[in-house]
Length: 195
Length: 195
DNA sequence: TTCCCAAATGAACAAGCGTTCAGTTAAATG
DNA sequence: CATTTAACTGAACGCTTGTTCATTTGGGAA
Figure 1 (tube, chains in turn orange, yellow, purple, cyan):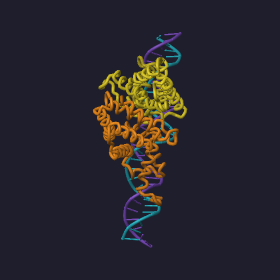
Figure 2 (cartoon, helix red, strand yellow):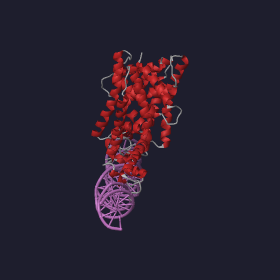
Figure 3 (cartoon, chains in turn yellow, purple, blue, cyan):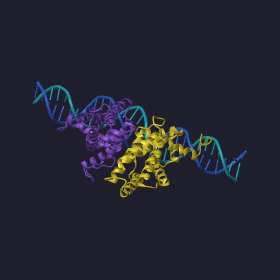
Figure 4 (tube, chains in turn cyan, green, yellow, purple):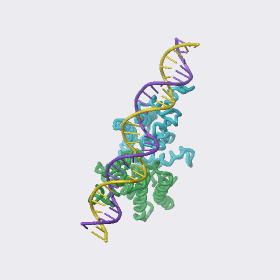
């Protein structure tokens, strides 16, 4: 029963990636089998290989795709104004981008060690690029005199860890609205870099 | 060739846990086989079952042991003085405890989803207890008037995420000494909760 | 209506998995 | 020196793994 109605490549392809993302986020790359992914989509394991050359590439595509989306969005955001305004924009951007992408964020942070060396290097470079966007803002603020930062690189890592940590407790439909979360975290970020 | 010289239970047991910790930290629980762990210790896979009833329990023992150590240490530390002094003590304690335990920290944060429901609940309760130690300090400072914290629970999670994030970039023998790291992070933590 | 071929199936492959267990070894005990 | 037994080996168990491929299916084009 191949080629059921509406069951074309353009539909199954995204379904495969969505199923893989969901399952890997919940159980981890190594714990999820190609057969489980296929079952989630409603096909046989062999058919997955119409959409990915192998399991490793499927993982890489998910993680790399996420980083490309992130860098595209941060570039489009194009922060400007004072360093303080830029830092606020970055903080709110980070939260707004990451909160609705819980699975992507989870996979992108947890499955780094399951990437091949080459794939790891590619993803890591993208992550580094994102971190640099924040570090640049911090350095501008330091020069401006708005910020007091003993070590911009460390402060960068500290802020990103703090913000990304939201994913550890945030649940959609929970106690707090997104803008309330933004306000609380921006408050902490601002205070932590200003005198 | 069983019972080689000095190859007793008291020696092999710790070796098994050390090998499991190392391998799981590097490759993940699901990706590490009992045969790999055994090979690292220098025994056959079957012999592992003298030291653990099964693979799941081995993981649980590592994670639960870490949390028990952590809670024991935080209790022994017995922070006192003003809320600010307590927060500084907690911050420095967290860094000092976690930095030399990179593998334990990594496993304890990454492998939660590979615990059985019951084991997860046990470990999660311990983690919650640790978080509460910090939250209590924040609430005292809020009452004291030293801190300005809109939501103590969230600030707790934010601070812990920030501090634990050190493990993401810290490498022993790197650019920064432990006390320098402590100073930088304490500076950020202090500013983020004080006006 | 006929044909094409993208998109599936389903069986097969060798390899590896966690776990069990009868048998072997050698340090410790009497 | 003889015996006991904790610690280990090595083979086997049934099952799952990622991946391949000959075969089947059926929607769309001619």
